[in-house]
Image (tube, rainbow, N blue to C red):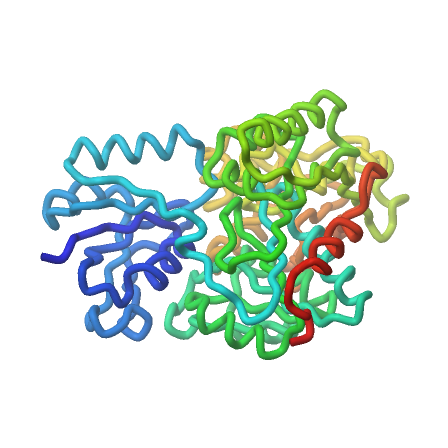
Length: 449
């Protein structure tokens, strides 16, 4: 008899695990996906067009709170945990629930879900959301282009809309994102790459995405989401670590896996962390070596912030609008806007909490660690409207926008505002370019074949 399973996810890794492991497996019946982390992603159907001939009605996507009922009513044999950036304790609480209700609990190894690409792959992964993958991805692409190679970026999935329509997505312009009705969270991951002249692929079906991306690339750059592992089998894995959250690299899943898989380990934000924080992360990497894991090359690096008019920040009362996921489930109390405010001499930080509207007020209640920083929530039109209303109601001289998108293209901001940018920089104890190209030059196939 077919073994009945439920896949726990957040509209990304869960669909990928199904596609590569279970879609055409008649020995398994997937009763449902459960969904968490992202607003309004439950209550959908994983469509038959993607689920395959074994699922002519598709597969329901239900709230994670329904898991106990599902296990009992569907007589579930096994629960597959398939989402990222959660503490080890959280994973084991979910495991304890499943086991107590009579179902096995399983995590799939990265190697079991990674697709072999037709081009060399550089994977940029991390130990937590908000560690700084985006500027590293840009730096990697610049290095490759300086060698005459054409990189194409393949981004971790963010399928929050029509799943069948989003099976394979290609973004080469801002208009492509407009046509796809991308959320703020999607734009935060695509827009800075497209503005840099790069083509980005994303979607749901990564076998098809790989085929399409490889057709126009010399080399694929996997740009991970949260702290998830790569969907493509990497020739070189770069893992970004965050000393501002020293200790998290060993306490969150699957970030610790990424640390242990790293060929190149980047200790990012070394310019804003203390020496003790940097050393703590370095010690964790060295401990991995002692346990027989991959011996990563360790490079300390900086995340350098900039604004168009630094003098306009000095002495001002500023409102900090930061990358949403970094602040929420990434558990950071600040981001690039806060660093820019401090670096360029802001006199005071404005507090949006007293005037927060709707979804923004809910976010402050759900994530009390935020303080005055304002998360750029925008999974839906109503969240964007709440964000706009909150920003415009805040009392400040200047809005510093630390999310890596042109937020003012999506909402009307009725006060002076300025975009904060950040970029990767080697710190001096090693070169990302040298470490990357040394490994790429050693792979046994020609990059252009």
